[in-house]
Each structure stands twice: as C-alpha cells, then as structure tokens.
Length: 115
Length: 115
Length: 115
Image (cartoon, rainbow over all chains, first blue to last red):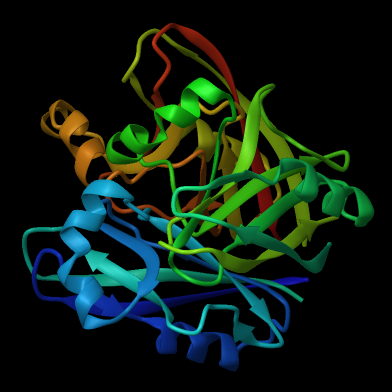
C-alpha cells in the first residue's frame, strides 16, 4: 500500500464553466504505481466543485437546472482504480465546475491510495 | 494495509427508486479481511447516486423535496469500518438512488481500504 | 501505510447551525502519525452534513439559498493531508452543518489513512 501525491493545474474562464478532466486524471494514474485503489481529488478553495456527469452538449445546457435539483456536487470526489484504469461508466466524465464569478487559476490535489 | 476490490449488482425499476443496500455492503465487509478502514462505494454511470438517509416511509415521501433543498447526493460515498462493521447511525442506511428514467442493471464498485 | 481511527464530539444547538471544525481536525492530524494521505470524516446519523466553505459572515447569511442551489453537502468528506497539514484553500474551512430541528450531541468519525 502506498500514497502518491500529485496535483493538476487548471485555468477557468467564467462562472459555471465545466472542464472535463478525465484524461488528465487518467494520465496521472497511468504514470503512477497504484494498480488497485482509488484516486482522491480535492479542490482547495470553496468556490468550485468536482463531480461526474455525462459530458454531452444537451446535458450541459441543463446543468443549471440539474444543480438546483439533484446537485451531484462537492469539493471532494474519489474514483476507483482497477488495473491502473479509472473505473467509470462509458460516457461518464470527471468534471471540474467553476462556481466563482471570475476567471481563476486552480490547483487540484490528486492523491492515489492503493497498491 | 490492503485494498479489497468488489462489486455489487443491482436492478432498478424506475426513476427515483431508492434501494437500501446497507446489509449487502455489510456482508461484503464481513466476508473481507479489513478490520479498520473504510468502504469506498462508486456508481459507474452518471444517472444514479449514493447517499445515506433514514430509511423510513415518511422520509421517502419527502425525498423529492429533500433533493431540491439539501441534496445529500453524489456518485461516490465512503463509510468508515471499525471492527469489521460499518459505522452508521442507528437508523442510518446506505441507499442507491436511481435517477435514470428507465429500469437499469447497475454494478456498484466497492473498494475496502484499511488493515 | 496505516489507518488511525478517531472521533470528535460536537454539540449543536439549532437547525442550520454551522460549526467550523477545521482546527479540531487539524489537531487530530497533528497528533497522529500520518504525514501524507487523507482525513476521512463521516457523520453517523442522516440529519447532518459535512462540507467546506468560506467561513465568513456574508456567506453564512446566504447559506440557505446556497443549499437550494449548489448543495455542496454530504455525510462524508475527505481532505488531503500533506506534511501533517490539511490541504485547504486560504479561507476554506471544514464545517459541520446541523440539519436536525433540535439540539444534538454528535460524534464525528475521523479516519486518517496514509503513511
């Protein structure tokens, strides 16, 4: 068992912007030595959120109303790792959502825990 | 320290269906070798959610309004393990909530991390 | 890699009360032996929540409307640990939110996992 600490720099441009960070997180997992475990993602700062969603145009249009109803959001998110791959649904993406009213530079914390 | 990877198959019938999966997760914990740590649960696919709630008829009636207000939901959930038991409140249940508009077969990822 | 199990007793007085528990969690981390990993926090009982927010008067006034819109809430929360410190934004606080209609004594589960 081990912990691998990493980070991911992001630049956001506007409130409500949604960045698909799935491939970037998968690249961090691929470069690491954790075969089975989980990737623990955390946003320092309270005006942003992490979640997963189906990243397609139609859904994004509806995100404001989704936020008002189901609100699948939080500052922390983990995704399982199996055989050095993130376990996600076919169209499921890990997304970063900017909730601040202005452009921001963000550094996401990525901790891989497993063996 | 070790990681134990498992899964749980679920069948849902309609949007908004709530399945109490507490006993099934506890059975996975009981069969495993992790005495202290946590059970990390994740739903591959974005149209379902995991949370805990007090699983009683009155509350379920109010779930739609609860979803609109407090929204204690997410695709990921962890629950602590102590002495091979999930640490939950007396009436607290782990629930899977179907948010898709149709019946689905679901496979939940269950990772136990601890020692 | 190891797991350290702890707890934190809290007393709440009213529905909607927000307790800043950042320093108490940091004290648990400082007393422990985990240098790098994460602190996994969980509320047994379904009528309370954990999240992070910028703990300043203006924001607290707006919390009810925030709960209705972004809902950054859940019964579980993890925060990364690096060099025995919680990784948080400058003004980011870990908060416990009482959602029960009455005063409660609460015991929060705190598991540190790392090395």
